[in-house]
Each structure stands twice: as C-alpha cells, then as structure tokens.
Length: 299
Image (tube, rainbow, N blue to C red; front, side, top):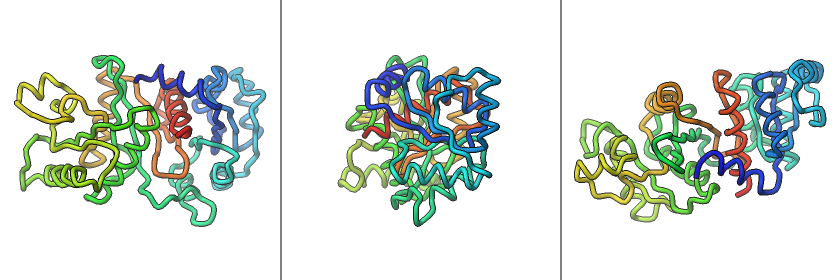
C-alpha cells in the first residue's frame, strides 16, 4: 500500500464529499481543486463567499462548480461545516483558515457535533522511500500530548480503524520506546508491556501489539534480527505508537524535512474523518490527506 494506491482506491469507490470550514485559503483550495479535478471528492466550501470566489478566480482553481455556503465568521463556518457532516450532507470535514480550537469546539458539540465517545487523535501517515509499497501510521504527534495507558488503548483503536479501512485487516502495532526491554525507570516501556499483554488477552482487538520496541527494531527486519528480537511485529510494524506528542511530532517532521518522505494526516475517533493539516504542509500533503480521509470514510 502506498499513496498512489490510496488515491486510486479513493477514486474507484463512491465519490465522497469534503466540506471545508473557512475555505477562504489559497493553500487549502489548491489541494481541494486538485482533488476535485482528478475525481477524488466533491467539494463544499463554507466561509466568506466573496473571498472564496476571489481566490478561485485569481488562481484559476477548477472549483467553479463547487458548492459554496456563506458564513459570516470562523465560528459559523465551523458550525455549518460540522452540521453538514453530522446531517450526512458531507462525508469528510476539512480545516481551512480558522483556528484548530474553533473547529474542535464545533466537532465536540454535544448536540450536533461528531462525538462518538472515543478519544479524538491524530494519525500521521508516512511513505518511506526505503520501503517499497509500505506505509507507516504514526500516532500521536499532534493531538494527545501525554497519553496514559487508557488513552494509548484509544490511540491504537483509532489507528487500527484507519489502517483497516485501507485494506490491512490485522495491522501490526509497535509500541515505541528508546529501548526494547522493560525498564522500571522508563514509563513508556512499562506501558508498552501492558499494552502487549492486553492485546494477547483480547482487550485490544483486530491487531497485533508488541513492545517495547526501539524504532529501528520496529521498522527494520535487519536491525531486529541483529539484536536477536523474536517478535511478530519487529521489522514489519504498520502502526507506530509513540510515547508522547514530542516524540511523535519530531518523528513526523523529521520524516518530511530530513527523510524526504511523503506524508499525510487525519484526525480519527470522530463520526467522520477530519483533515487537519498545517499551513506549512505542501499542497501534495493536503491532497494525500484528503485521499486518505476519503478512503477512511468508505469503511
């Protein structure tokens, strides 16, 4: 599985609609325009109608046929967009030119939001040049800061649901730490051991969990064999569960800026996938994120 196959999978299924909250942003509209042009999604643009039309005209974006819904401010944009997803008028929610807190406030509204009772978490998706036809799913480098054991169960469950939507029925989860042995002075290793046992006892389902594993042992079969690690996950992990947001954020951005990897990301745990990208993300990253969310919404 790679991003090209995900894009093809999104195009081959029923076309999904993506609603953008506060869509008056040229970077976001560039990705949405490209996604619409290749038949990936049907866009719904919520925000300042005049600004949206002005940006579309200035950049010759192929969005003349897109549905535009006017909203007076960011809060209204978020509420309108979330309600459209909640009312099944759109399949995927995407953040535009508004604060993340404003969007999440609408997502978590108790009356008409997208709450499910599950933890809301970020899943970063990384395509490595070194691993042909292989994606890594990283959680959580953007949302849950210092997850406790129960939250790590939620992170795994959310990531597993995303990975299964891409066709990997039993993903392998590596609980990442600095070392591959349990050390009472390193809490991440204790959580990793507990999560592994919970998986073996059926408390975490639809996946294989093992840890603690250092990153090299999780992604490199050569490294794991050299260290004599016998594990169904070592060297072939699909999901990388990091101990905290710093580790996840650094790993995700290192993959992009130093490793030359292709990346995408989405929020999981809500009633529908949410595309929440950074302004620093490239148009290609935003496009891949839209494709991943469209596939995730098919499941």
